[in-house]
Image 1: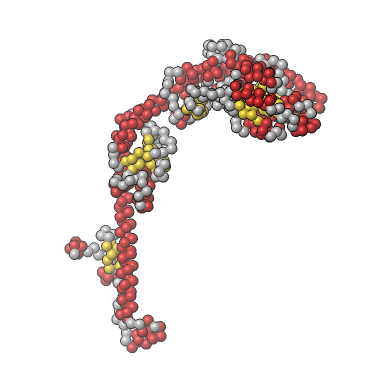
Image 2: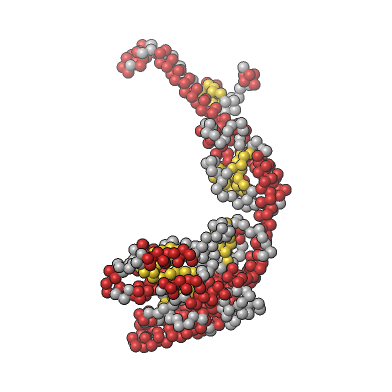
Length: 579
């Protein structure tokens, strides 16, 4: 976005409105992809039916045309092409070429040719941490041949550009140690926030130390403009470039670097690009880059009127306008930013100027809600702290007013944060807050959610609000729902304790009655053979141990004699209850 803003005053025809579709004849972007895919199939067919001589002539013709077209479009003089499917393959090709240039005997002697003066590859720290190691592994070099150049230090804002002083110091130290500076990988549009390395100074350093300068980045697409930003003019002085045509223009299999290889010409890898450019015309690339920069300028102009964008917006805007690809990035010292990269995403997702306006409208609504939420948060926290039945909960990340936990009546005077709570009280606290959060979330999913606090207890996360005067109603809703759940939970706990105690009492009573019955009958009646004689001689009285039942309404253990006598359960009178 910053690069596009810089080019607003220099890019030709950007002041005049562009068509909604950057392709004047109205060709759908998906059709371009289909055309490229069909072209790849055609190249495979031609490779199987043409003779080697015919295939070489066709490959030379298509590659020569593409080389001339792209050199004209990007104003890169005396460039030759190398086609590759994977993005890193171009860098591997550059690395092998530089090794052969610096070490002519490398192809025959291998690493022995490098032993006396080991090569060094310099790469910006803005690159992926695995990119440098991947290049070394593919070239057969140890990781000691890699030098990661830090970014320029800044006390006020985040900076991804290469530190020229650190680079020059590393070059001097390596040369003094007998090493050979080989390759420098810099950026014309860094991966995170699209900043441009100082290519003019890098070119001077590379010329002084005879180092190959290779540039990566989406900002290189601005070279297709008639008048690109001044900071990108020097990018054309790089030894090689990577042009990500597949990402920029939604052309499958059209990633390029600034070299060619006779072996790849035989495969007709450039045929799909040749057919696409023939059909669209050379001006289509410039128009699509212009269209992307115009979208960025439009978004910047609209955002100048809105100063309250913060990190949480991305969570609510991610699905508001599906064709606007907005990425959340975190920059050291600068916090969170919303990143819009139209050069890479506009063509693929069919972003239009109407989409930008719709996004701004959604953004304005979200900012209004967020401002109301942020301004109401202190009042919400004060209201929670003043209520003895509620307490603020600490969570790792909450998008809204905050998180709250309900404190049951029997725990109001306990220290919840301390470890003095019994396991039973801890479980009760967890249970009631989990039930509360689930119940409130079912009632209003947009406002309430179940989260886990840092102390290990569930809590209720309260989301964003549009009206500050709704806070008292929210607190009353939480307390009312929690009180209902707490009462039910208390009743179940009390009934559980009553049942447990009654069962234990009944078991003891039945055991005692069984023991008494045993001694009343005598020991002789318990011996198998002797008991039959005793029962014949003196029949025992027909007595039985009475049963017991639990009266849930009264919580008492009662005898079952009346039940068996009347063949039904009876309700005792109130007088009996009092007695």
